[in-house]
Structure formats: C-alpha cells, structure tokens
Amino acid sequence: MRPVVAAAVAIFALLLLACGGDDGAAGDSGIEGVVLAGPQCPVEQPGSPCPDQPVSGVSVQVAAGGRTVAEEQTGEDGRFSFAVSPGVYEVAALATGDGPFLACEAPQTVVVGPGEQAAIAIHCDTGIR
Image 1 (cartoon, rainbow, N blue to C red):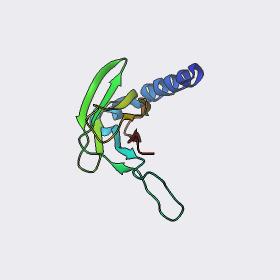
Image 2: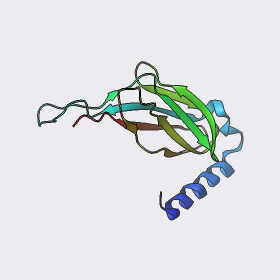
Image 3: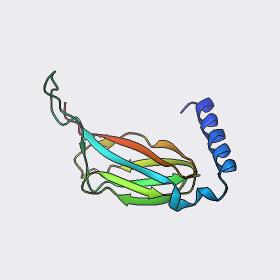
Image 4: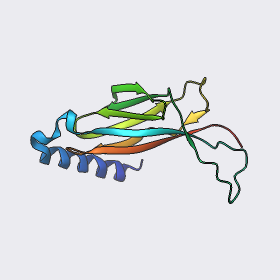
C-alpha cells in the first residue's frame, strides 16, 4: 500500500473512532467475508464461465497493530465473520500448502466503522492454468 493511501486510511479510521461514542461495541461492528479459490478451469471461454469457488476450512486471521486479534476457519460455504470494535485491521487467509490452492492474496486492510459490517472477498490461486 502506498504511504499516502496508508496514511489516509489511518486518518479515516481515527476519525471514525473519534465520532463513534458507545455505538462502537464489538457486537455492533465486524468483518465478514468469503474465501474463494480459482481459476477452477484450465481455459475459460466466452459462454462457458468458470467462476472461483468458495473454500471451506481455510484459516482466516485478523490483525491490528501487528498482533493477531482473531482467527477462525471458513465454513462449508467459504464464509467467515468476526465481531470486532471499530478500527483498522489486516485480514489474511493462510495457505497451508495442503489445501486446494497454492497461495492467497496479500493481507487486505479493512476499516471498520461503528455499527458497520465490513465485507471482503479473499482470493486464492489454485495454480490451474
């Protein structure tokens, strides 16, 4: 992430926290998402889509300030959710090497506002070409 963008995200998050009051309880805000693996086909062609598919059992970590604050595995539908207080978080899917993919994208920065459910999708590469 570029330093200017990172600074803007941090300032935005601080403003959200400053305006939050008691509305920012962890039960009211959080992060939800899905882990998808693809490509699923060696060659995609028009009229024959081959969308990425949800992946179950993938460990997803949420970190703040360089420390892991939550971790869970995706459900059968590839989904995950975390109740977290408003703030700036890094969310990552951990590729263990024994799953259906080679690697997942870099951790994503997520800004969670008071009473907000931030939604993300994490993509992992199957290596199919």
